[in-house]
Image 1 (cartoon, rainbow, N blue to C red):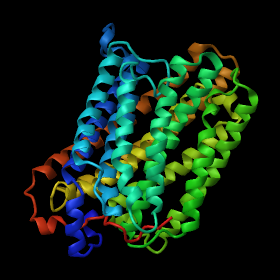
Image 2: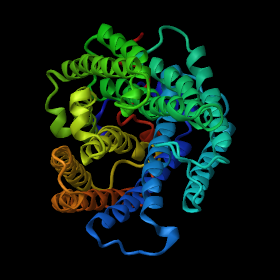
Image 3: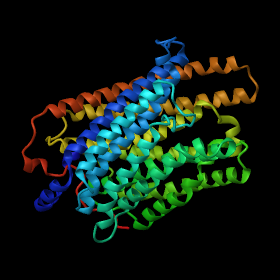
Length: 480
């Protein structure tokens, strides 16, 4: 468990305690998990329509389409963004030995970001969604969200830039995310809306969809891995060179992949071919990163059994490799003829957004939350074990189920079977998806119970609370 990791010297711990605002870290982590629960319940509600048991028929406010948007946007901006913000408040001051630009700005951003997420929910329920995947936020929310992302960059970039000595790979990823994310959000939220239409808008929308994953979530996720894993394993990353290949490969190839969402469209074919090639190239880049981390694990394999955060992290890495391998096949023109618009794509999206980044973020919460709240440890390690196994097994079931469902649907459509036939063939798979999703929701409520009981425990003394559970400052991180 997290509490078993190495400690840093007492003087360094005292210095770090003054740099890290653990209260805002805890607020971000807990808020992110609350949004995860709400988003998963919205997804469960949406899934019931496929089983013809939707409980709120005829109520416009609770139409399945609206709750599907709350499910996706809640995960992206409520769950993922909040925990990543908490993670950076924890990691960046510890690596740079400098506080964020302004702690008052940190709290302003926290309150403003929750207001943005809630305003998005209100706008979606009011029918004000925009017609862009992952960019459905109402028009009146977009400028505020854009300003918020700029403020986040202003708050985190100064300590990284001013840090003396070599820059760690983690901070390369963080700088990239802080610069790329406002640009990506502006690209998706304003350019298709105000400047282009038709095929050009589709091309830009496709790049936005994928760059939101590749240039916002991915650099923050891998940056978190380069920060957390070496400290938990008490050893440096295996290869500094491979870490640089991973970063620059992501920077070069990922911005080119987004148009693979619109193969066989009016978008010029040379752009579609370029997206296919760059998508396949990303798989090779990801392979170097996976090799790097698994070679780092070499000799410490028992940590997969004894350390729950490491388990979350490495299962997420395996899922990342699977999703990228799957993507390199499914973006080819041959494969697209079968799986386009099928549940194969739904399974792929769930594995990457929750099976990868969701797993990493839950692992980070397990690793950090008791320390951020000044607690001696988790109320129940056994509950955390159950949460991991129930979540990971049900995620695997959902992914395989939807992958098979997508092939069944795709081949029936290719053979021009009646539409009703594909619906009947899909129903058993949709039932399995709902059951697996229910198991994941139960697991997260178990996790929430463990968090509540942990927060209710008696705080430890200040000196004891300062002992790092897993996530000291600089040791073990490869400089770039």
